[in-house]
Image (cartoon, rainbow, N blue to C red; front, side, top):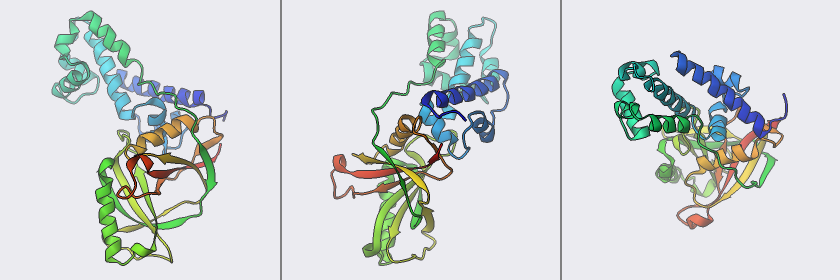
Length: 293
């Protein structure tokens, strides 16, 4: 395979968008993850993460954008009916179509169809995904990490509320007289769904302990991290939005780095306690699993 440059990755994303566009225009079922990953020559494990980082939107958001674009094109035809358009572009009901349409254009389909200039402007806006800003060069090092064991609990929701889940995990550690053995605070985001957006969804809140294994119970479970090579980037600042910052790492560093992502979950090592350190001075190491490209 040729070098994994930014242009190469963007061409792969373009091929995926083309496949999605054909499915929307023809009213076909959307391709499954394996098909989309194959088109992009990417591992299914990281496909959604890389797609989102490079395109600036999730696969689900791309599909919504393409459906609305196709709807605008159909509504530009004077004989096209709104109900037929809604069903033709993949909405289950005209009501669902109307809600999405109004949210996107602040007008109903019937109101917009008679305004040719607004239709053209809306179509032009939807033809391209959001612009992904070019970020300054990131200070990334590739390190080898020995495998290590942790105790975790699962949280699902807005990652800005992770402190509550970590609080419960610390309470569990205190109940088991483990706080003095704690060796590190970690987190593992899980965002493999096609609609997954950064900083939302499932997240493993995890603690590492010294001096051997720790017995888990119905409130916790063991996980393993590390092993192999990892791209490590030190973030300084609030812990909010680390998912979006990880996307910037993928988009800004991975292309041209000489490395590719391998099938393991990224993780974070939180070096400071938000209750003791000001938000602007908090430090976290973000780890991406990599292999030579």
